[in-house]
Image (cartoon, rainbow, N blue to C red; front, top):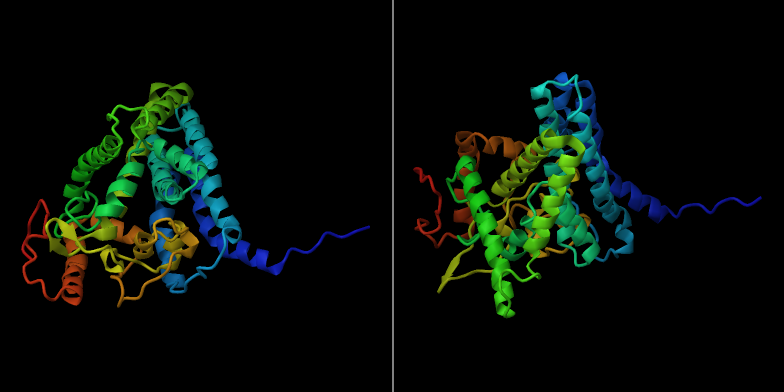
Length: 382
């Protein structure tokens, strides 16, 4: 009789290190509990994503350590598996919920809305963040998975906008999702919904134009985006009827809101120095807000290490490096709590405007007139 070989300690350690990033998977059963029991149970997913992980932040503190950049792709197996396996799980959960909720006689209209609101928190807080990770990878398989996640929330153009516009123009007026100083979220949100789609389409059309192709070329990824999104809507109709389509749109709207409020937080008021002739300095760590809070970085797979993401966009999330306060601006809390503050503009300005002014004095003391950089639609006294 032969015994199986023991698992090497290094493999066990890698699995153990990746495990906390799987805590976000708890949102799937929480949404289902809300659908089955109704009532206040529908609040479980939002309460977990917004408050529980923030409370855990308080308990476990910051993570300022860095992973070894010499880590190989093979050693990142468990981290990659988390982002890839989420895609079929979210697909089954989303359309299973549409089938169940559209037929659930024990749920009233508000409870059904609550279930899909929680589903949108799941597909936005986790699904879009995971799609962001997948779309930044170079292999087609992971990018295709990212496209599927975005189609599930009707926001496929995010791929083009993020890769072709945001990373190139972050911190400048040409980037729609860089929130201007004093621009409240409720003004930022409708502006970014309008401008992001336009800037994404324009970027793709310009790329095709440089190759001598018209915008309607089959190589324009917007055909793929529209096809995937239409397929998702048709599937929602098949599994849930017209009510299923309405519920699907509700969760997509919530997910998009979750994405854009995070975009609002990530670069609020931070601008790259204008060098003249339409040119700006290179993107540096100072142009993103960071948060080293441990639990919310588990939830959002290190998205809060945002400066390093802009420095190395295709660097996988477990390898993203932390930056000290001397190198990059720091948020007082993790993204979920900061997102809640953003919903109340006076609270947001009270917290963040002094930090922006300190950032300006720290990095750009030579600039005395910031009027050219203040592109807010609602100018307020400084």
